[in-house]
Length: 166
Image (cartoon, rainbow, N blue to C red; front, side, top):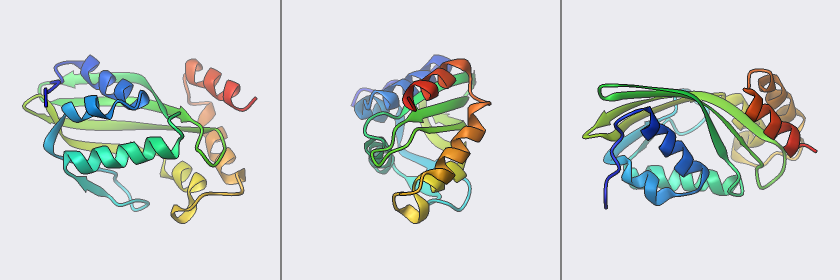
């Protein structure tokens, strides 16, 4: 596998573009073989270990969104062997609704590849769309949480949200 080393902010932005485009092969080339992904909090399995397991998880996330999950990077920072990014996501889950979330991710690199990956985002939005791991049939909680986030989103994300609920 050819590696795509992350050497600047653009490297992590490319990682998010690959996720948006469901290019999991490209994403895999940016992850160290023994990479660890952690979601701080208690709403999900907190730690996923290994590149293949992480790619399987991210593939499943994109499938749950019908291939519509898009990342919009607000900013990214790169210093030595660390990268951080502030992102927004938009999409339409296969079971309905207009999805939006925001988060900050921190990456520790090893040999120019993501080795540690901590992703902090609004888990209340996730549990509103997938309560107890199932699919919601009542979108009132999901709409409430997304509407609360709407005002924090940059204008390009707000435009997406307006278009997706029409």
